Length: 198
Ligand code: ADP
Image 1 (tube, rainbow, N blue to C red):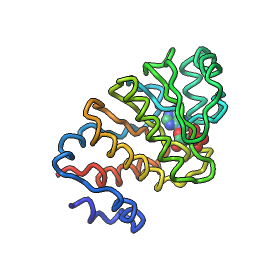
Image 2 (cartoon, protein in one colour):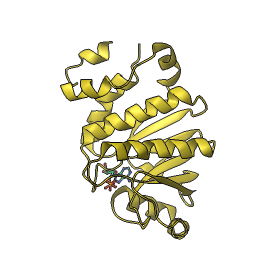
Image 3 (cartoon, helix red, strand yellow):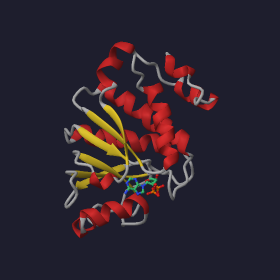
Image 4 (cartoon, rainbow, N blue to C red):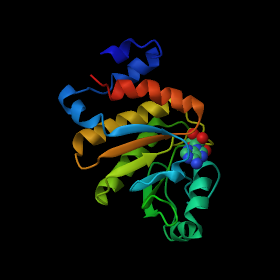
């Protein structure tokens, strides 16, 4: 695997990466389904964008603020009917003025809990499946105000996406929306490990 010889990969990367087994036959069918987008998630015309929300589902800062501003006040009105969302879980709403049809709100950990971040990704994918949606874009959940380490967060995101795509043939696009230069670098490096092009 030429990707593994890339000097940019750290020992931490290799240890994290060993947790997943790449089946090269399945790989051919899924590695064209993932991409990295650099910029504002509110511009993406996909079935669902993911919001890194807070547990009260009240518009805050960061990507959450941007999504609520772009969606308009109806988004907050629908969120208010949901009774909040615990850390690691996810809730779905309409997208209102966004080009995306739906917003999947998930609450990332504030304490660096890797299992909680993993369950955010898994619960977002579960809603995608439940609603029979085909395209989704994720921001770098928890890595902003919530302070989760960027590199480990990217490993969790990529590993979760790989597992989901291996088991769910109907989803045809998973976009990792990077916003900070550090995340652009990390995703560009790690993408080759989780979705190697042979
Ligand atoms: P959290 O509270 O879960 O840490 P933040 O919104 O603070 O969430 O940050 C999550 C990530 O979203 C950060 O990388 C931040 O730079 C990024 N971000 C901020 N605004 C946008 C946007 N409009 N589109 C995509 N990503 C964004």
